[in-house]
Length: 292
Image (tube, rainbow, N blue to C red; front, side):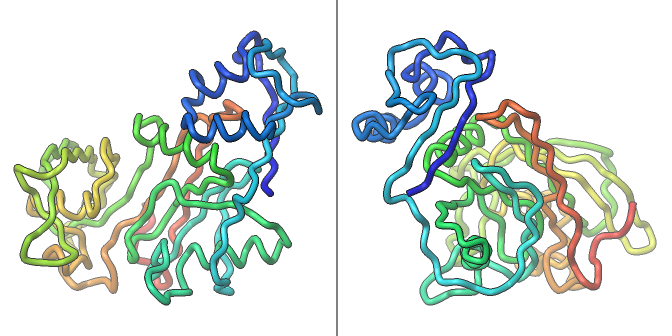
């Protein structure tokens, strides 16, 4: 079983449990129903009354039955950038899948499983989003089913701000811009995506951080309004400046991987209401990204 505690803050005072789950967190109806029927939500040590008003300072405890995540352990230290009892952020290295496919046991999720085992913790954990195998940087994880659902909702509503740094081939002329081009599958390649009129809406905002004329490279910062597969890679190829190292999308082969790093995650914590701002340092050795 997974336990989590949430202190009722001033903003939630005078709301009921029902209003908090339904209106504030917009938790899935099925999950809310299961917690309510199993009497797994308590307030100040007593089984929660779902229609009674809460008071500032009340302590809610939620028990999630049968929610332990199991993966085979991969003994590799992980770089945890932030952690509390609801969520955590990991700095993923290059050449590592986020999720295991068939028979894979050396992914980030396997390493996270070993991390919690080393702390002797039974733990639910699921990534809220993912990164490509060769993209480095910050990945946000949830530590229980409610946290996962709420964070997914925040991601959909663009309340979680993700910032990427990229090294693009060539020298971009515009200091900033927006690429608004739909992305779909490439019918001629199993894994590649392409700009397609029939694809899903995809919007990438970018600004140039620094130009490197001698290397014909542009260091740019990207923020996504959408989260399509390979979005930055496809959009930069579309404007004629593919990611350096990204040979799948026509980038120069000067690096052993595409030069893309998930540099920062920012959001308001849904359970503590604190401003969370996590920045992931570059971890390539030798380094790909220059000091700025």
